[in-house]
Image 1: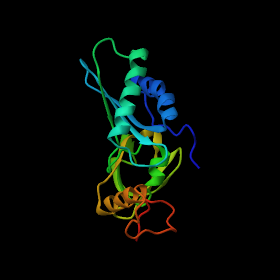
Image 2: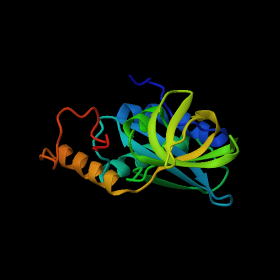
Image 3: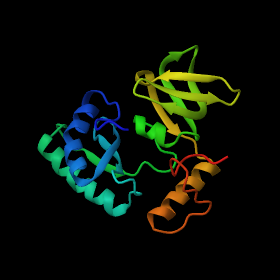
Length: 195
């Protein structure tokens, strides 16, 4: 269902870093969620990653990713001076950067900020209805539905809600091999919103 190259959209130096580290992380069983660079004098490279098997990412995963990414970037040498590396999981209210992220969290509340106005507005907050490579579909609280062009989304993330917390807790319980409360074998996704 998902393309092998369902990668977050990056530009410039962030794209170069993502391209440099992606093969290593893929070989280790991880996927890039986001690469961002913060700061000018001593830049910090922030790498957010998921486990390719869908299990929750832990401290040991972040440590392994940090060592591998650090080694790749030491060779690639994208900065002329000192720089820092920060590796983390996406968290519960994670950024939505790939088609698979949008699809995984269909039914949950998200905020999308556009780089250019779309139909007269820059910010959209609504329930995720679906996504493909070209657009993301949201239903706003007043019921209006929008298909936002993916290439114009500056940033997007999930909104922390009780439903999202419950879905995340249920997924964590399943990952530990425990029965999750309200476990529904017919659910298409462990993150699907239950009505």
